[in-house]
Length: 305
Image (cartoon, rainbow, N blue to C red; front, side, top):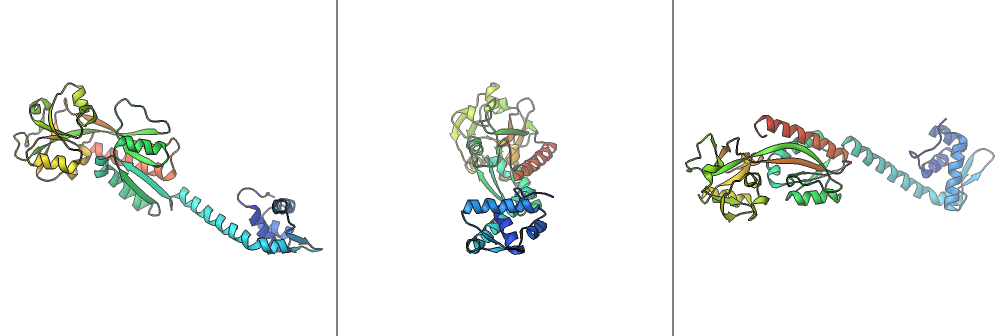
């Protein structure tokens, strides 16, 4: 016959004895040996420093100390029961919290599509999401403040300590032009053909922008307008102030008065998109990572490579 273990607390054994009126009956109810139940009660009496039961010729009854302890033991039992239910909900994805992070354009398509499926499958899990630069999310995942983040770390940069990177896809860039631009109707465009254009970028240091791969390959664009916000970038393009790169994942959210043109395969800049998790991700993060992979795979099949 089994003996008490972590699934039953000393207080739950105490309540079983109080309810049954004997160690033998409580042991039978719990599926334990009588001697094991007796040892558990003795351990609780040693812990509290009081005799909790009066030993009778037939069975036991609560002592004064036992009657004082009874409502507290019931409260402990109820809290343990609630804790076990919440822990089981985490395991089965019937509850819990998933803290997500993503860089801006990943939040335009990739993450929302995965999140919609996740919410349909696991409506009991509360999902929070914060957008921001990849370096911020890598820091938050490493600190245990995010469970999963979609990031695009600098090329060749190692993952921070406490972070595991999972490759999702290589995302191509498109070029955004005003609708009246001579190249707006072309099937694709060479970057050299746009070398004299005014390029709208997100940072004065081109190595920290979407143009980084093209710059590394020798492309030297003219830049005059720095805009960190996508609304400002695309507004400037629509007004004819210049051209800019748009990540393929964000293409569906581009305003209608801006034309998107594919860049020639020999020139197209890519950026690697990863999911970042702790080395031992939560159950919810693992499930969401699977959906991100499915969503990324379908994006690749539609032409985002």
